Length: 322
Length: 107
Image (tube, rainbow over all chains, first blue to last red; front, top):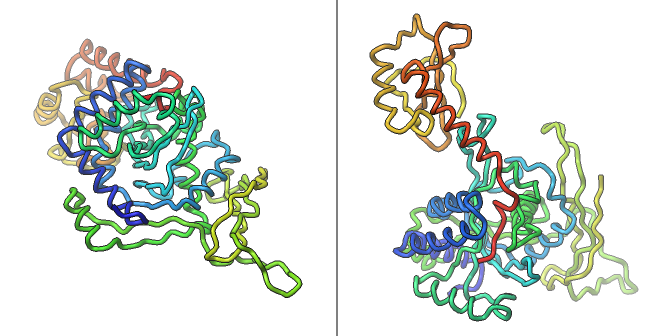
């Protein structure tokens, strides 16, 4: 298995292979039946839609590899992002994406247990007006969160038998990627916390992650590099069913020194940083004349330290600038 | 879907059976071919649906004319009312979404 950014394409192939494989329908029926039993038909139907289009979404998606540093930046920016801000189509940097995280995204469920997912697929769609009380198009996102069954989280300790059984089922189906969550969400609902949270992630951090990640992708601090995977990886993805092999978008923090960057003065005129670290970043509620509305804009953190030094996790000061 | 002004051949039009009712497409298209007169009847409203080919029939612009809605004209008042009630119920159901419906549950 690849360990770097090329995994994104490899995982895209794996997802497509399992969705188009013989057990996807069986797994989906069990998953959806469970969701309907627990949360009712209204919660099951959007999930059923996400299952039904999963193959198309994965096949069309731009594969993205999210480095641990980018994940850290996203999590930090989430802390002060206002999730009640109205969502607009232009908030999404990529309309169809598959983001593989270098490290799992960890959320807390209603019991305070850590739950981890590692991959998210999404596609922007306009639902037909029949879906709307106002008879207008309904801009929405089809989303699936994927749990890598090789990852451990708080449930391993708290419910080992249940997790073992789940892993056994997925392995028997030949699936490495379990569906952690699947839904179809109109953009209008994304800013309504009461609709986005549930037992698995009451704070709806999964939704905030998708929103903030896409917003950060629009910012200069995030370097988006299209990388062509090795031929063997591309051929393997083709064998898994991917008709169109796209380059992987690798998301990482920009390492070039930003404008205004100044090395601090030291006695010998040299900087002696052993790490890179973020100094400060914040969201500014900025007026956009072209949009005729306010919109949160991320004012990126300074990054100090040598380009090749590891990023040091430090407590930052984030402010809301209204 | 967007309403569209302009000329569209009847051959191009498709009928969304979720709206018009199961099995309605051949009946509607036959009725249009045999009875529709653009000179004396209201203008048809068609639209495009994102992700789908072709143009889709929405109805006709009967405001200020003696004609009832196209659904009632073709199928009669009782059927039209039943279809509209069904659609209203679907819309109402879509409006009354319980909290947490889009949220991540516990597996």
